[in-house]
Image: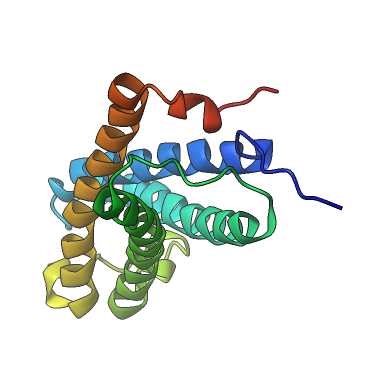
Length: 178
C-alpha cells in the first residue's frame, strides 16, 4: 500500500504551531515589559507569575509539537530550488524547536536558582532577588531571547518569500482546510 504525502499539515500540528506562536509572542512581550519593573516592586509578582506560567505551558506545547511532528504525516519539504536555502530552511525549523525549548528550560533554571516558586506562587512573602543577573541562567535566558526573535523573523521572512516570490502557496500548508 502506497503512502500519500499530504499537501498540508495535520490540524493538530497547525493548532500547536499557532499556539506556540501566541505563547512565544506573549512570553516575549511580557518578559520585556516586566524587565523594566524593579524587583522590589510587588507589582512585578503578577506579571512574573503569568510569564512563568506561559513558559511552562510553552515547554509542554513545544515537546508535544515536536513529538507529533515526528509521528504525523507531513507535506514534503517546501523547496526554494536552492540547495543551501533548502538546508537552511530545515536547520531553522530545528533551531526554532531547540531555542524555544532552551528558553523555557533556562527560565525554569533561573526560577530554581533564584528560589522564585515559593515567592511567586507560594505567597512566601520573601522579596525577589535584588538582581536576576546574579544568576547564570539569566544570562542564558537573555541570550536566547534575541536569538529566538531573529530566527522567528528569518522564519517569517522565508514564509513570505515562498508565498509572494516562489508562489508555492506555502501559507495554506500551515492552516486548516482540505
